[in-house]
Image 1 (tube, rainbow, N blue to C red):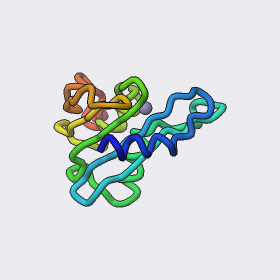
Image 2 (cartoon, helix red, strand yellow; image 1 turned 180 degrees about the horizontal axis):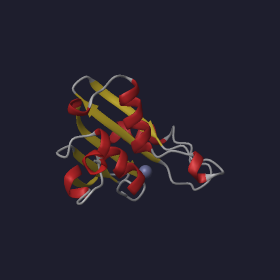
Image 3 (tube, helix red, strand yellow; image 1 turned 90 degrees about the vertical axis):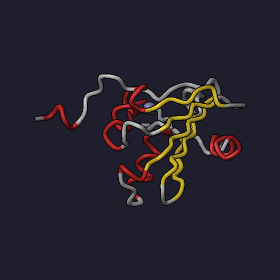
Length: 125
Ligand SMILES: [Zn+2]
């Protein structure tokens, strides 16, 4: 997985903030990839995590089929809070999230531990 994430980092378009990130979503039906795409207007870009998640969704993957999320960056950062919201909405609480720097896994956490007290569909009643 480390080599795959490193290879994906080369596809990142981090032209503006120089912060490449890659992500792999592991599902029952295969792996789905994403990289971050930065733009001159930051909100027009997208993070690697959401890019991978939306790639999986585009390919028909359902919530229960998503098992693991792997994320690599230079310094081993966690998903931003916009991505956390998307992950809470489209993944199960027990999904494993693996955080990598360039050389190794730096942590493995459950989505529910990364997103305590999250806002979700159940709050929209
Ligand atoms: Zn993000």
